[in-house]
Image (cartoon, rainbow, N blue to C red; front, top):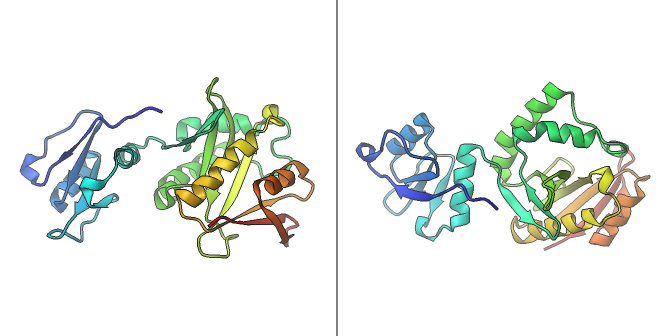
Length: 250
């Protein structure tokens, strides 16, 4: 997967801050003045604290900055620049965050035959546009995960959507809800199991979740079989009639 970050530089004095930096540079600083000026100029920046400097205010704050891995710096840079994160690869797909450039493809996905038979459709275009922008601005930034897009590795075609979310349906600490859909022209190819198996693994190993829930229409036998294959067990029928499934993963 592509790398957008070329280098990091430490700037701890305002006088040392350049007027601008080329693409691919992430500034690191323990100076609030430098952080504020970078934000003002829209320069990608992260603060780092240590024994002598604490209490910094910045969207991205680091401790033990010298121990931070390159992948984490890459993700900070992408967040500053509004570039979607790459999440994971499977045998036939790659999964990444949604970006606003994907909106038309997402609409086309949901408009395929049978896609909304067992799930809610998207909002109308302008409302969905506003919803997705808020999702990027708040959910991805707050949790570091959410609903992602699934792409075919060979064709680079959008073929689905899947991920985990902390929602009002989650009733226990460390619990998230698994959601998924696969393009109707790619059903019965094992893609949902391939993708969701990897997401369950990420939920446990990367995001520290203790359990997952999932919901589906009782008539959606394909999704029910998939959840059971993944290791979920049926809990009960919700008030809205949906089946609720549960899996402990810690």
